[in-house]
Length: 479
Image 1 (cartoon, helix red, strand yellow):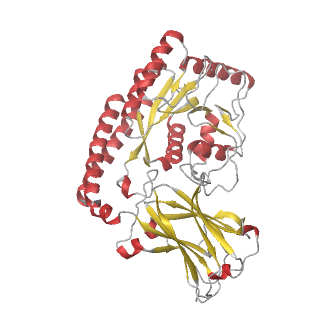
Image 2 (cartoon, helix red, strand yellow):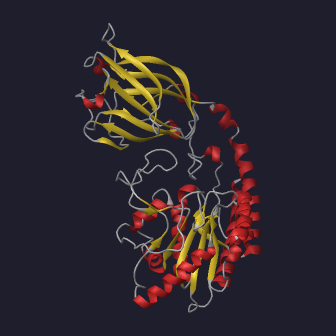
């Protein structure tokens, strides 16, 4: 199977390489030939219908002599079946335990009371991300806490919404000759991609608000061979912070991996079926690229978490191969009001030429301010420490001038890829403060809302793209 996969993977790479060379020769043009606008549409490999709908609709409005157009697609397929990944958003392999005993009764975290005192902080709340379904079975608390507090409660919550899922109450037992006190929980299934929080509460207040004894022993933050992944934790000393294994927690939860044997038994079959799907999709994509001549393959695995890298690769390619004034980025579920956008960009180009402002950096789009940084879910960001993002443009569509593209391309090697291409762009450009053009002929939106003066309309299906097109042909409006 591995030899088979390598053989067709090499063929796919050769096909993509040839397609890319064709695109460069057809679209790049002479170095001295300057285009008003380069349009780049982010598109997933299997979004065939979305690309087709754009070609039949608003793409036909682009002036071929003054505009350049590309669908931006990752050149590599993820070879791992979605079930066997940590997340649908990544291409990371999920390693599950082969020993059934680890799937049946794992306390996490585990603490050995006989071990020496550790130097890390005492964690009273922590969150974890579920990479594979697990069942909650029991809770337990360290006896040392019950000698300080007469009653304690452990809450299991939805980390994103704060909704209580389950709880267990603890009181001082008659006998103190024990290390742990355990309480059984009603079985509760935590599905894949769920974000959970385990919280310790004492006497109707969070333990974090009170002085608590330090943990003894070293917490073994066992992660089920990646079935769950710890993300953040709370301690009195540090508050909420990213997960640090050099800590201990006096609370623990017993989890069981759900239906492990069945899933593992079908892994080989899933892998073989996935290889066939990839082979079929790659052939279809290669044929589309050769026929349409508007797909630019960039060197990334085409999954959601790689979108920032995907876009930066595009900026680098555009800067190195094309001569242009403006670059418009959009998603493949977005309809663009080409006449209004083009009218304003021609106006801006003339104004900048007259005023000598061609050396400035500016961006044009729907600017978002004060958006909180998500620590859980699809838009989880753990490396950007600030509580809110700097201003950024909605990712549905926006315009950058050539100087911004040059800045991003030149510095791409050092720019960290945060989650989300729009939030990443805001972080990357926060130090240069791009200007915002004034007196625009249209305004940008983040979603599907629209009026007669919107530059774009996003989040629409391939079928609705055709409906909007028919409406636009009649009224010149996206509504």
